[in-house]
Figure 1 (cartoon, rainbow, N blue to C red):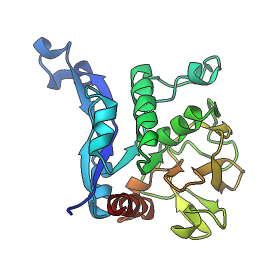
Figure 2 (spheres, rainbow, N blue to C red):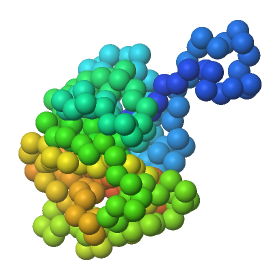
Figure 3 (cartoon, rainbow, N blue to C red):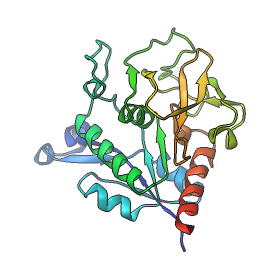
Figure 4 (cartoon, rainbow, N blue to C red):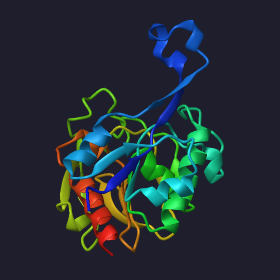
Length: 242
């Protein structure tokens, strides 16, 4: 049967972001950016990773995939959840928001297993009618935006809710990194909270049907193979066997 094909979303930036590495003649071009920890984590979990570009039709894409990773990145545009931009809002990439929302909708229609990470976790929440806190400071609560700490180093623990699908793959407490300055405010419709930080901030959600698992931390930067990626690949294999 072969390994399941797992699609991974990414960013699209102007070539000028690469500075002097790109000649002037190419300054009007763009490049797709995918951090290598995502495909590496998929591969180590037994999947076949493929980095997705946004030029293809999303319906056709999901027909070829066995699973999907909604990866981290820029802040979600607050206009999508009816809020005015906060003064501390980071850069937004509305084109990416719209592409990933369309990809998410298409994936849901074919019951594709989805692992949503950090920005992907927040985008999922917004897609299902939830809202976000646009900024938290380092000295608030558990100290979430730990951008000056190596992302491969856990900075706090989360408590996993018993009886959830997430609890079947993670222990009751789990050490995580913290590379985000936004948090879930209102949980999206139908989502089950699966993990919280010590200050009560939602760090994990899932869907009742078990087809979507989302975490606020970056598991691809922690131990390998990570349980969340192992879950995704396992779900993808089970789907192909139906």
